[in-house]
Amino acid sequence: MMKKFFAQAYLWMIIILLYAPIIIIAVFSFTDAKVLGNWTGFSFKLYANLFEGGINSSLMKAIGNTAIIGIVSATFSTILGTIAAIGIFNTHNKRYKMVMTSLNNIPILNPDIITGISLFLLFVSIGVTQGYTTLTLCHITFCTPYVVLSVMPRLQQMNPNTYEAALDLGATPFYALRRIILPQIKSGMISGFILAFTLSIDDFEVSVFNLGTNGLETLSTFIYADSRKGGLTPELRPLSTIIFLTVLILLLIVNYRSAKANKKQTV
Image (cartoon, rainbow, N blue to C red; front, side):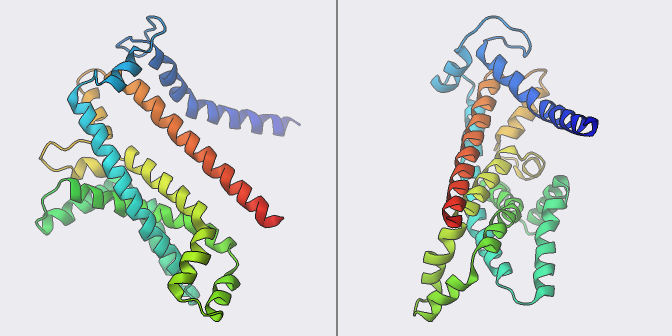
């Protein structure tokens, strides 16, 4: 009995430590105080400033850059990660499959700062000017392995005989891929896209080394530079709250649809 109590207490303590800062930011996003922790009364002023353009242009550019890079990198990461997952899954050589899986896991386990420095040195060595393109390539590079991990479990749950049956009935490999495999792994692809987009928004270490010197900023680098000035722009509080709620809602929708699809398959 005591063992169960301490286990649940430990779990709740971890949950509180993880979500307490987010809840604090969300609460103080409904006051127009410039300093976090100073409650000056309930207000939607910060949200109004965020949507009406009452914030500095640097933050708006950083938000736009982050959204564009995140969507583009998540899209390409989902495509590349799905292709890679299908290729690894269909490999009949167990040793080769194990090697490829291990190689896919190395970028995930590798510290982000090492990845950022490595990509920075790569672009410098080949003489490529850093900017939008290089930063997007960097994000695609470190996001793709996570998409592979998201898609692989769906492939393992899939019945491989359906693909072979489609080929036996005269379907081309591409048609069988589009009509048989992709619909069954769609939930994993969506989860991978959301994860890649979230990682792209969240990234700082890789971005700070590969922004270049043309004034390009992402949300993470803007927040870092803003904090070094002695404080944070108040509108970052409602922005952080909106991002968190958006990701949370998307995950709930994906999990609900995945659970509903699994229930249909079992019936």
